[in-house]
Length: 176
Image 1 (spheres, rainbow, N blue to C red):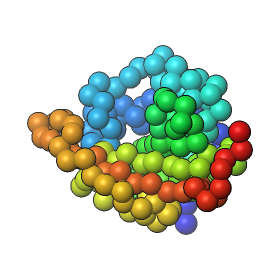
Image 2 (cartoon, rainbow, N blue to C red):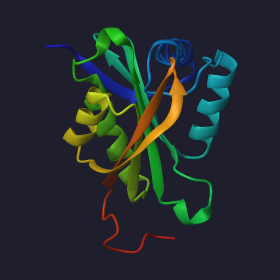
Image 3 (cartoon, rainbow, N blue to C red):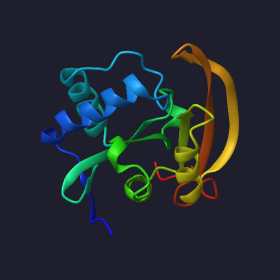
Image 4 (cartoon, rainbow, N blue to C red):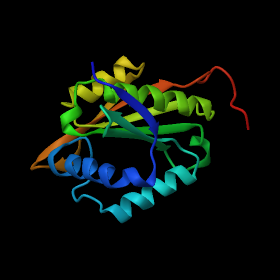
């Protein structure tokens, strides 16, 4: 069995995170970006999220950074302030080894601890069975599909929307 460690990401992780994301942009449909952002842009994004109090995690598999996950604002308007959108990206060599699920479980726990009440997954490509399955395994429910909203690699792509309650969800009003 592989040794998995999940910890807060640091600035020293950003070159590996940038490489993982660049591969996802160039070869996959999980993200609808078409040009991989450079290290400076990924650093800016990291600092914006962590500076805003959102969790950003590094996942190590057998001592090597094999993936990362973060939560950020779902939408900018204030009424959405208790809802986050999650992102999980893995090095292709670490797929199907439990790292993505471990990252997402820890991300859920950290978002609950911060008082967030809902988590949204916007999954690129309805054929992305791995991501859809990982989200189902961690308590997400399918809430809808936006058909043919992205165009990448010469074809139209859907986004799959999934949602999971955090903590008390909608059962009580959140703390101000």
